[in-house]
Length: 525
Picture 1 (tube, rainbow, N blue to C red):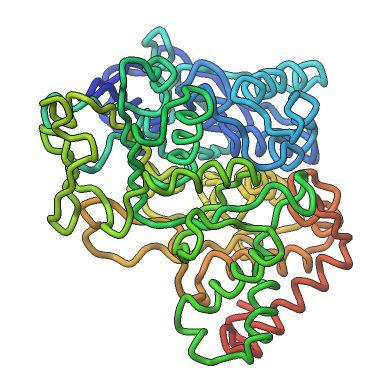
Picture 2 (cartoon, rainbow, N blue to C red):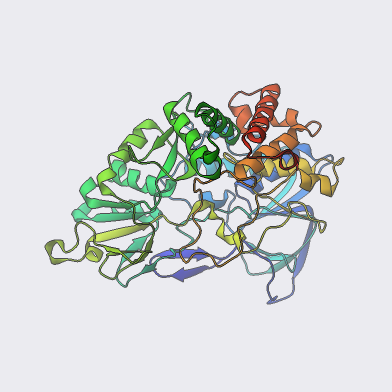
């Protein structure tokens, strides 16, 4: 697949698949399979693995991706990234990722994860499964065909088509910044940081306060050894950071446990009604978790307003806190970088970097700007296509976000397990796959949506969608037993038995009804 080159060293890969497009030429050959899975990232690989394990009879699978090898966004990630959740809760159902990593906290590296996914293709073949991987191919849903790496168009006769790229991450390498960039400004994705180094007094301005921005600052400080006075870090929204230390680096707070913490904190505060219509209800949960050492804040005394489950250990969090003098906050998002290197914010205000005009040189001449503002979980590619059911009557399956943190691999496995249940009708399967409501219609903000804002907990909040889905899954014959034997299920990872998981879900539902956040009809819908 060719690259579309755009300014400032970014490459935008063509879409993994398109919904419709004019055919340049008719298919020159045709292949057939039971399942065509479009997207060989975390969701697609997990779907295929669980499908192979639980299908009532052997199936043939064609796995197709625009990249040359499986692994999805890990192929495009920066070299110094690691998985920031426990490896034993990531990957696929059949094979432990932790066996592939040497990290003491089981944080798999980019190369280890790619090796893991490549090995799955061999393992499936050795087990007798019929799985064909086609890399470097763009699928056209409208014509049921793809163009392979050689440029030939191949038709696919598949009983079912699985769209596993709906939650594809937005990465700075592939998604250009939404702010404008003046001529001569050196703007790079974080992938290019290792090549820049710290020599000759180079200055850096990191744009974005999420996990990518945090990784960039840590890399600058720990690996490149860049002094703090040569770093500026623009953080529009302070984040809550998940602690990777207590009670064990192998555990991670889950969305269901988070709801329980919010209810406990709300009750301890006397259940103030005003908290329910504001961010106070969820913020009380973060405050409780902070007391327990389970979350960190970036700047002491400053209340974070965003949460995307970025995960750090105490040492990393303290190193970021040392960067406080370099943090630029309270001004919102950057709307443009001027040709002199000044920051222009969405409210029209401007800010010169501390070293601007040093030695008679502009900030643009002295600074490398690092784009960390893509918003990995904005899912920009699929957002443009609109929401659709997980299971369609046309034989198409769309893997989507049914359950919150941690979720990508887990969601792929859940959708595949439901697909294998012959006793469930199409309507019943979709009833087990409630989706968060789509964003309100209207013109998108010029700088894009802000994901992860800590706000009121409404009935359609993804946390409550996750809770309702899990309650339904527990009520589905055989599904609870499967979940608690699944390495990807976060409550099982944290040691909950089936009975304990069910009890926690019921306690949460009862507490939310009592608090007035759910009414019985909403609770059961």
